[in-house]
Length: 393
Length: 171
Image (cartoon, rainbow over all chains, first blue to last red; front, side, top):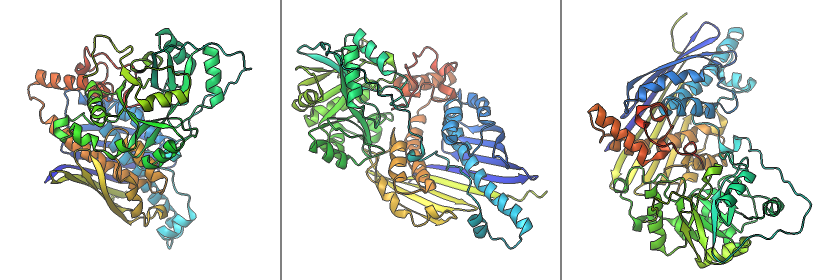
C-alpha cells in the first residue's frame, strides 16, 4: 500500500530575450505549495520570487511566505547556492519551500542551456543540441540538494602555534577524573563557534579534569595539542569524530586524518590495528523522533545493528540528543555489555561539560584514555547538565 | 511571444509498504533533458537501505550515463539525521552525477515524511489544542526550534519554550 507521495512540477517559459518565468508546484500528502520566480538569463540572477500555500500543517506555517524574498538577488550558479537557499529559505521560511525553490532553480539552469542553444541556432539552424554542448561550457548550477561533499571548500584549520617548549606545567590529575570526551572547536569544525582557548578556559572554570578535541574529520596535530596543554595547564586529548556509512564515530588512538566518508568496517580494522578505540557517537540521534513504537524499534533489535559489532563503547549521554534517545542508547549499551560514555558534543563554549565521562583511574594521555575505556573503567555523567534533571534511566 | 514552454519537469517520489518490515521508496524524474528513476528498499525498524536500484535513461550529462552501480554505495545507510552528508560523501566519491545522489535523498525524505504524516494525523482540529500539539512537538524534540518560520522566535508555537543554545542540526 502506498503511504506517501510527493509530486513536483516545474514549467518554464522564456519572456523576451533575457527572462525565464518559472512556475513550480509541490504537492504531497502533507504539504501543498506553489512558487513563481523570474530569473535573468544573462547572469542567472533571481529577479523575483513569491509563493503561496495550498495546504500546510501548523497554524504558523503561513509565516514562511514572507521570507521567500531572502532569495531574491542570488545567482543560481554562484558558489554555495544550494546551501544559501537552505539557510535563507529552508531555515527562515520552510524547508519544503526551499526544496521547491531548488527544483525550480535547477530546472532554470537547464532551461538556460536550452535557451542558449536556441539563440545559437538562430545563427546556425543546423546546430544540434549535442553539437552545441560540445562547444559550450556547461552552467555550474547544482542539483537541488546542493553540492557533493567533495565540492565543499575545506574549512580553515586552526593555526598550529608552537611556542618554545617550557618546563611542563603540572597537569592536575587525581584518581577519578571527569573528562568531556566530545567537543568541537572553531574553525576546525565548521559547525562550531567555540574557539579552542575559550573552550578550555570554560572547561577549567567549571571543574572538568580534561577534554578531548573531537573535531569532524580533523585530527589536531600533536604539537598543537601539546602547546595547548602547556599553556593552559590542563589535560587536553586528541580524538576525531569520523563519519562512516553507519553514522558518526568518536575515534581515539588513530594517528591519521580521515577525510570524507569511510566504511565502518575499514575504519574499525585500521583503528583496532593501531591499538585505538571507537565509540559510537549519538547512535540513536533522531531515530526516536517518530516514537519507538511507530518504528517497532526495540532495545533487542537495535542491539543487533552491525555497527555495534565494530565499536568498543557507546556514547549514551550526548548533549545534542533527546533524553529518550540517550536513555535508549544506555539500554542498548547495557544489553550489549559495552562501556558507556558521555560527552557534551559542545559546539559552543557554554556547552562544554554538559555531559562527560568519569574515569576511575588516572588519565594523562591518549594511551591511558584508550586503556581505561577498553577496560570499562569509566561511567557517563551529567556533569553540568542541570542537576534537576536525572538523565540516566 | 508565444507561451510555449521552454522546459518542463515532473518529479514524483512515492513510498509504499511492501510488507511489515519493508518499505519501497522510489523517485522518478522526467524533464525536457532527463529521464531517470531510483528505487530504495528500506528495512524497518532501523530504516536501513537494503537495496538500491535505478537508471538514468536519458541525459545529456556524460557523468550520469551508466551510473546505476554507484547506487550500491548507499546500502547499509540508515535513513535519519546526518544521512545527507553520508549519502553525498559515499556517492560523491564515485560519481559526478549529482542528480542521482539527489534522487536518493528524495527517496529518503519520502520515507521520513511518510512517518511524519502518521504523527501529524494525530493533530487535533480545534485551534488551541492544535497549537498545544505543535508546541509540545517542539518541546519533545528541541531540534525543531528555529528550524523554520513556524517554529522560530515570535511564533506562538514556541512561546515560553527555552531555546537551545545553538542552532539545531549541527554535527
